[in-house]
Image 1 (cartoon, rainbow, N blue to C red):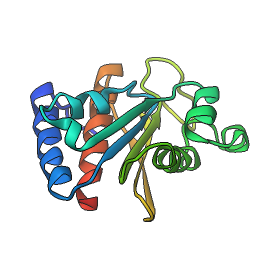
Image 2: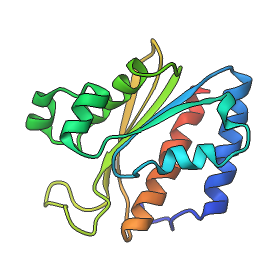
Image 3: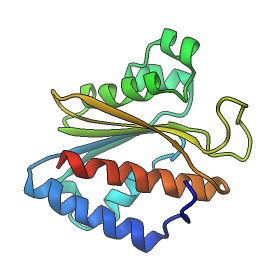
Length: 166
């Protein structure tokens, strides 16, 4: 993705719009975050009245936290790594299992500046979305820029990916 990273105003506007749609649909959102460190939850809870449609956010950075908090299987992490479709799918499902939410988003990626590899360079991010009792959708992104830009782009993509589920 070569678009510039969204600013706070843009993220806040998208979060407010999503919040209205969540409230109107009587939905509750849960986030499961790794590389964004809770930024998606922050964007959503920056909106006044978010307690009507935001259930909780889980930041699971380590393998151990992903297993304990979200039920990611050790075998998934060993075989595919934390930054994989399989891990994102298990994270989003686990977030729904461990919350009262009706809708979930999960992100796992490499924000940089280090940590990248030839097959998973800095900017590689998997995002998964799921509605309770629905199918999971997961998508691979490759964002450009520094750590802040990768994280901002991830938050934006995560929020935009919720729109079709509302």
